Amino acid sequence: MSSDEVTALLREAYLDELETVMNYLTNAIVLDGVHAEEVKTSLEEDVDEELEHARLLGQRLKQLDQSPPGSEQFDAQQSSLQPPDDTTDVQSVIDGVLDAEDDAIETYRSLLEAAREADDPVTEDVAVTILTDEEAHHSEFRGFEKEFPMD
Image 1 (cartoon, rainbow, N blue to C red):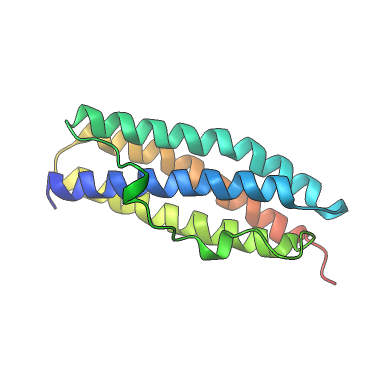
Image 2: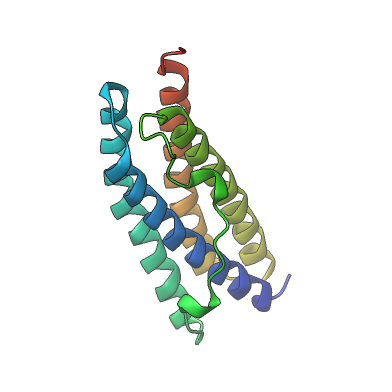
């Protein structure tokens, strides 16, 4: 893999993080019900972390003499993380978060591999740092999934 692949993956991850920020924030606002509170709190906290991931990725692109993509280069991908029509449908949000985190984990593993092959230890470090956070998010929402009451 080349440094072109590294920058392509950095751009993809940057846009994914920003889309995640939008969807987490929206879901934290719209969810209702007694079972929603813990999920909403977690999403609100994760918004800041996901935004920090975007900052790290954007800064790494800048260090590589590349620009982070702007909104015109954005195509929404997270259909499973859209706010539910039924604002008490917490389960669909949990499922959407798990899908988004699965995708993020896959992207950061690819970035890690590409950075290793391109002999780019700084990008490797960025990928490992963010991958650690994404796996923690995934684990937390797997816990929500296990605890969520089945109607």
